View (cartoon, rainbow, N blue to C red):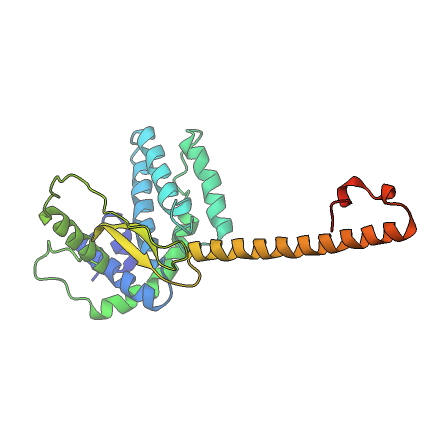
Length: 257
């Protein structure tokens, strides 16, 4: 059996590495280390990057490989942006140096060495546990399939076997208007499973009832204010009559009885 360092050396995902990756997915979730399987993928991709820098291959290919590593593991569009178990300071430092490579200023073969060293120490305990139970498959070409891969494969097969929907003219169901003060509200709902449906909801907090209650409150408040205003006007008229002639009464209050 090879050591972890020997197994990771060429950066190629061997059958053993496939089973180790599956082992990491399972035990990483149990140990609250959700990024441990991505640590392995990062390590392997960095080994490929190193191989490109040492083989004096096309410089454009090196820059694209560097960009891919940054996009997948250091500045991912999936939260968290850093998809491997390293500090944010180390991540930012590598991104800064990676920009030099991607801009063609220099080729840095040791660009990701610091992160590889940290990740290797994270992987070692899992490798020890994996090697205690690992048995090579009878078929050397048989690859390990994770639970996520099985789920995706099942969904793809269901999609391939699904029948295309029939072309039918869409007709909306009729909604009958209810009483003005009814608590029942009708609305159209749509789902992939059930299609278009009319949904009736009941409740004291339904929108029509809320609007009716608000209108009643406004009307009651307005009546109360008008009552107070008329009372004040009558008092003003009586006061004017007691202190002076009717000609002193403003025109706006002469009509108050």
